[in-house]
Length: 425
Length: 175
Image (tube, rainbow over all chains, first blue to last red; front, side, top):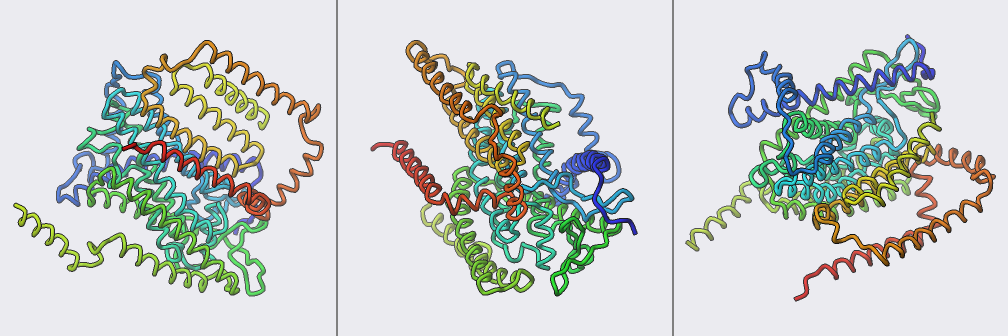
């Protein structure tokens, strides 16, 4: 058993550098293989094979793509604003690769020199850091669309700026519900609160999770919200004029955003690196000591970090994140694209008021529970789950308008449309 | 380390502010302004005002400046801007306004004293650290905002609402 203490300054720097390099490398590798996953899964969904020639199961395809993009010719449109044209991809990729820094990836790791937190930077503002930096992502897209001096690219850039500002509001409001329940901004503490409640926040905050998924899809410009690069209307939108590695940088940025959003869904709503049911992995720094929880009298119980627990929790985190990445791909190849006015309608007239109302409801319920003296814990979570569940069903029923939930009953609307069409012809 | 970073951020902030004024293209001005705002956020971080820094980037750099960019591009100011530049009497007026503002600011700095710091600065910083430990970084700002300054805060919100209504009324097509 190793000593359970905090790192000295020197080892803090060493561990910090190692974590930065490690996380960056893993994120870049994950991004490369997400492109392969996207193509293989889309192949599966469309009943074809997808790329399977380079290496076993096409596993070397991302490397072939990278080499191709590096040695391809860089095109530079003659009438573009050169400086901004080059600046655009840089601004796009920068926020995408730094946001992963504040997401905790596993339980603290014991080493001979002290216990290392498995998070690159545990900043006190946590989630706000991610929101602030991802709000800068729009500059890259808008500037490159404008600098290309191409009408399609320009329209893509304008759409991107309008859409990303609109959904930032809904995204922020859906996160506020989580902040209310966690009572803190740091993501490590959110994971801890979910372990303490013995209930992942997706249950007590089910509607916030739905809002978060929808807004995250829109923020990352993924189908059904990929208006900035709608192929059928805008060629490929803001990156129409880009080739080779500059084009690749937009791709890396998009997939990094998808990866960060998936990791955030796992952390905010699915317990982060928490392994369900088992309490042996609960760990948190409390007044300078790593604790597992509190006993009946409220005294802290010391935690026993181990390499095995760190590896297991890392596995749990990776599995949850991979699931949401798969969900992203699944949605992309299943749903058709929205019309632009529908995107705006959903953002401002449905998600914004609904998310605001939901915050009031959650805050009100929590106030009542606190007044009644219900302690923060499993029972607290169950009551909120009940309230949220009812609201979620009501919301889905209202939005769905009989199409999915109504089942066979919903088919009636299609039949009506057909009847009307045949009557008029 | 902190001093080096402070000088770096301060140079970028001042240089960016200068760039906003002297650059001819509106898009360049805007990017300079984003650089200035981001550097000021960096200085906030050096003061350990993390919350303020995040809000600075989120609201100013991430939302308001994006709207500016949106408007500049929608009006296509970047390509034919010379006609929009005003000289003569306007530049004279601008000099007068800038000079007056600089004078007022200089006066303000004079009042602070020789060191440029408040005398009870250390005590205030300690109290803030204590509050941040107890209430979290957001609580330190939220607590006074929603108790002592709640009326001013609500009036501010009302002002913004009035501005939005006015914008909608102005933008509505007349028919």
